[in-house]
Amino acid sequence: MDDGRKGNDDMKAEVFLPDDYRPAEDEPFMNERQTEYFRKKLTDWRDELLSDGRDTIETLQDGTRNIPDVIDRSSEETDRSLELRTRDRQRKLVAKIDSALRRIDDGEFGYCIVTGDPISLKRLDARPIATMSLEAQERHERREKVHRDD
Image (cartoon, rainbow, N blue to C red; front, side, top):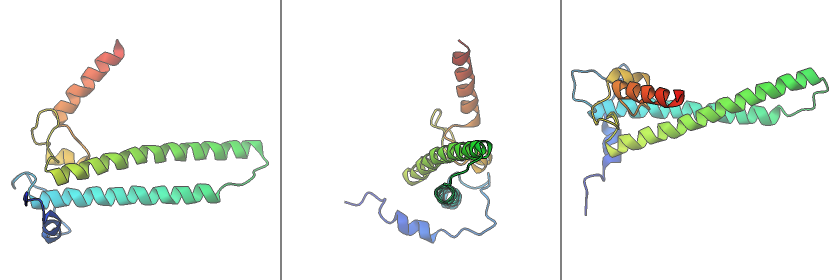
């Protein structure tokens, strides 16, 4: 039985997206072009992060060497530690990007998980992994701050 979802992959390929396209408020929210715009933005961002991660692994593997000077060795270990921390943050970011891509596939992308209202296109363009409207995010952060101060 066809649930209407088959062929979505075919539809994705058919959406023409000019290079200079930017989502606009005067078009239907999360129409095919907007959806494809954000899918491409997220996919490109994810590919860039994964490429950077591969470069880091290669650098860390190639960079293993015996440095006799204690200060130089300490400096290199600090650099490696910072690099690994950065990569861990990026790994978590890739998971959020994957989640956003799943929301696109499910038709839930662009809508606040708290209120169900559309998230502004400006916010989504700046932070395409956003799951809450700006107002809901601010309320969430205020509540977190209050609980942290307790």
